View (cartoon, one colour):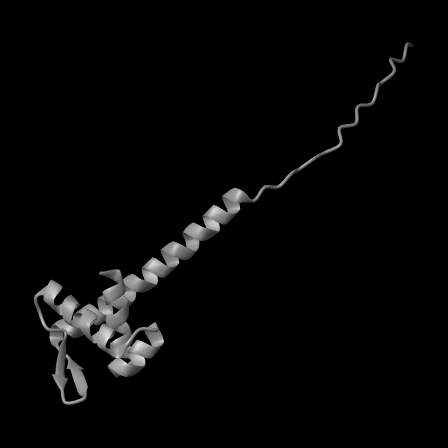
Length: 108
């Protein structure tokens, strides 16, 4: 479903299925099928298609806004996880020089 959300956001942001398909490096028919599958999965239309264009339905507007937010969160989650993993694989060796001086006892 995450990939379908990505495609849906691309369609809305690009304004056409063709440009969204180019952005996502898939065919126009594939992105169209994925959006239809997403609508089927949700059980509601997200887009109101008219000729070569579309409008967002109320559900589509809501889904678009929440999807953008969730996709940003997933990007942040992925980036931070990688950063933590990279830090765990890095090591830092710290050394120090320990000098010990012998103190002579002074007798009075």
